[in-house]
Amino acid sequence: MTAYPALAVEAAGLHFQNPVLLAAGTAAYGRELDGVIALDRLGGLVTKAVSPRPRQGAPAPRVADFPGGMINAVGLANPGLEAVRRDDLPWLAAHLANARVLVNVIGDGVDEYAEVVRGLASAPGVHGFELNVSCPNVKAGGMEFGADPAALAAVVRGARSATELPLFVKLSPTLPDIGASAKVCVDAGADGITVVNTIPGLVVDLPKRRPALGFGQGGVSGPGLLPVGVLAVWRVRKAVKVPVCGVGGVASAEDALQYLVAGASLVAVGTAAMRDPRAPERIVRGLARWCEREGVRSLNDIIGSLTWPS
Image 1 (cartoon, helix red, strand yellow):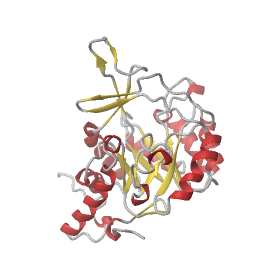
Image 2 (tube, helix red, strand yellow):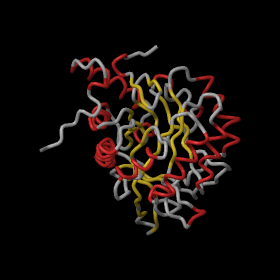
Image 3 (cartoon, helix red, strand yellow):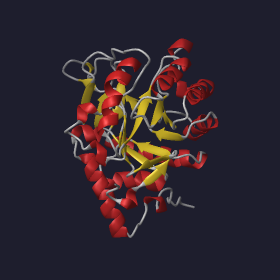
Image 4 (spheres, one colour):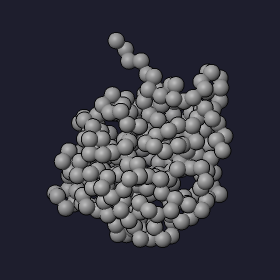
């Protein structure tokens, strides 16, 4: 039962009891957060990345704080398709009645995305997929899939051929024309777009005169990413008509509302939930209070309501 009817949204053919998700890479595979976050009170979660085979990831340290947020280089470590299907997805199916589950998918080549999607499409507890196209195309020179329109289209087409479940594509904020990239995805069969992924950055450990992360550079997240993500949502919403999931810097109901007004149907919380596991539920309650205070009977009435200066 939906606790707050005004917060219910439909996106990519899925019903979400509210628009608040846990972002990929911060929610693990759900089981790890049991007893820490009330997962079934949220709109859903995006799992940690899944690749065809296990990945060891980047060397430690993998995460570092800095005054503007957090930087990480986990290296997309994961136990691989078979282990996730066997050990993690059945737990999600058994423990979540209301929250929707999107599986984040990665690969070193175009064919690997389709391999993961095909392998998990019929698994219990899976409602859709999020394709992380910020990965380097190792089999074709190392350029990110998202930065190569032909490779991007091929990834989406391959995944589309492997399932009828909804497909979201997660795009990087560093793309020169994120709206055009979103259109490539939709034309190839994507049902939704997620923006944004982290921004590349470097934090220096001054006493050691070395990078704070074992890998060197990493992905920047946290409060500073909020305006970047909101602008990306607005640009994508202008370019395509599919639902958009806004990610980056969401720590309050007001942050989530910025994304919704800019055109997002869903918002995902990452760094804020890692720092305070109560934050996602607090955002849901804050959205409900705002709707009641403002007389908003459905979030659909404000999604995409941003008025641009003339």
